[in-house]
Amino acid sequence: MSLRRKRLLSFVTDADSLRSVSVAFARGVSQVMFQRSALAGWLFLAGIFWGAYECGTPQVAWGAVVGAGLSMATGFLTVPDKTQGEAGLWGFNGTLVGCALPVFLADTWPMWALLVFLAILAPGLQRGLNGMMSAWKINSLTFPFVFLTWLALMAARQFDALPLSVPAEALAEGEPDCSPASLAVYWLKGIAQVFLVNSWVAGLFFVIALAVSSWRAAIWAMVGSGIALGISVCLEASPEAVSNGLYGFSPVLTAIALGNTFFKPGVRTAVITLAAIVFTVLVQGAMNALMLPWGIPTLTAPFCVATWLFLLPEAVMAEKN
Figure: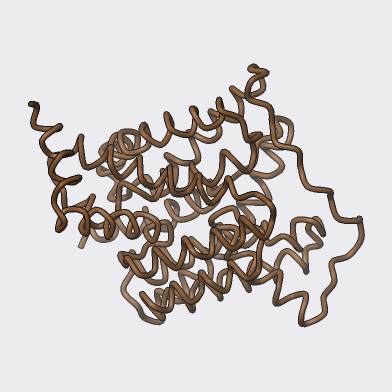
C-alpha cells in the first residue's frame, strides 16, 4: 500500500485524525477571511447555508462543502508539510470555487464534475503561484480561485452542456433606497458577497464568525463594506450593484488582509488600510468595465490587485531596513 493510501486510511479509521480533519476543513472555510478558527469556519458555513437556501440556490452551499473538502484533501495528500493544511490554507480557494460555479453555471452534472476537478487543482495552483510570488514577499491570496473560475466561465461559453445559470431579475433602474434600514441591508450584503451569497442574514452570520475569531477582523470587515457602500452610492454606481452589495466584498477582504493580517495594528496601518479600501473600490469599477465585453465577473480580483500593490512597497522597505 502506498504512503498516500496509508495516510488516507489513517484519516478514515482514526478518531483523532477525523477530528483533526474536521478542524482543518472548517479552518479552510474560515481562511477565506484570513481566520484560523474552526468555530468561525462552521459559522461561515452556517451563514452560507442560510443564505443559499434563502435565495433558492442550495447548490451553492453544497458546492462550498465539496470544494472545501476536496481542496483540503488534495493538499493533505500531495504536500509533505502538513502545517499549512492544518491551518486551513489549502481549503479556502476550493471553498470559493465551490460557491462560484453553482452561482454562475446551471445546476447540471457537468458543472459538478468541473467543480470537483477545479477544487482538486486549486491547491497545486496555489502552491505554484505562492512559489513564484515569494520573491516579492507576497502570496497568491484568492487569485487561484479567480483564475480557475474565469477559465471555467469562459470555457462554458463553448460547451452547451455547461449552460450559464439564469440570472435573477434585475432591479428597476433608478437610485437605490437610501433609508437607514436599506443601507444596513446593503452593508451586510457586501460582507455576505465574499462567499457569493446575496443575503444580509448571511452577512450577519459572517460578522459574528469574524468576531468570534478576531474582533479587529470583524471591525475591519464592517468598515470595508461601509466605505465601499458609501463610495458606490456617492459615485452613483449601478443601483443593482449597490443594493446587492457587489462593491463590498473585495474591500472587505482588503480591509481584513491589511488591517488585521499582514500589518501590525496601529495608526499607520489604519491609514494604509483605509486608503487601500478606497483604492479597491476604484479598481473594481475599472475591472468591471474591463470585463464587461466578455461578460465575466471580476470576482475577488480587485482585492488581489489592491492588496498586492499595497504589500509590495512594504516588502521593499522591509528589505532595505
